[in-house]
Length: 275
Image (cartoon, rainbow, N blue to C red; front, side, top):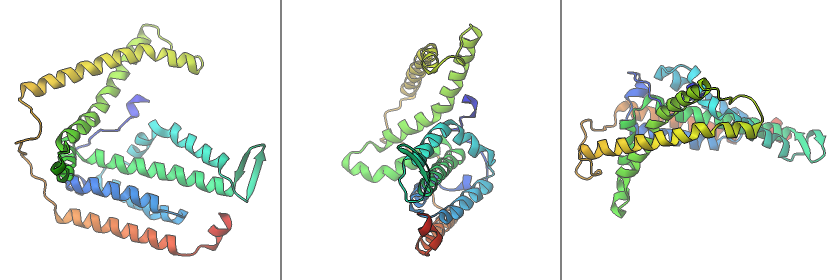
């Protein structure tokens, strides 16, 4: 399970998506999230899915990576779907058991929310798959640089976010090693009820926190030894520049928004009957 977590991982490549400016990738990711929340009927998800699948194909990232990025949060998606399925009120009731009832409106809302969460996770994962932590740090800092006028710590915030993102795979690997070591010593983490399993995690969390604090101290010491004093006066070896590829991607994403808006406006009588 832990080995399937791909959040924060970067896969080097030379695809058009890899070569895009990280600032544009970050902005387009936010733009795509906004587009997903603009979808108001099922047909709007079709171009959103095709767009994301095309981005994965162009970036040469295997489609199976979507499943790996979604697997850790699958319980949350299922729980959200169940809540919407049982507690959304509607006129077309199919099954009713006391206060719990299932209607067409509940089924529609449940599927829509689950699909929206899947596309949201897959879209944001594509950005981390194709953007190195250093490039992402520079992008966040430059996008937040106008706030420096009001003494906003843009560089420090970008550095903290990139370090946190960078150490997610490291902590996952460390957790897997600790669990293997505990199981080799006879620890049972797969049997028993929920409370017993929670208690079995205590021997894992304590060494994990100790390891995380030790790594943080080592990182702070290494930064001090390299005379790191924040972003003031720092220069970059690679300057970020927008290219025609970035504006083509912006245009395609804008076309996607227009298509979804049109699909939202077009009357669909059977949807009105269903909802």
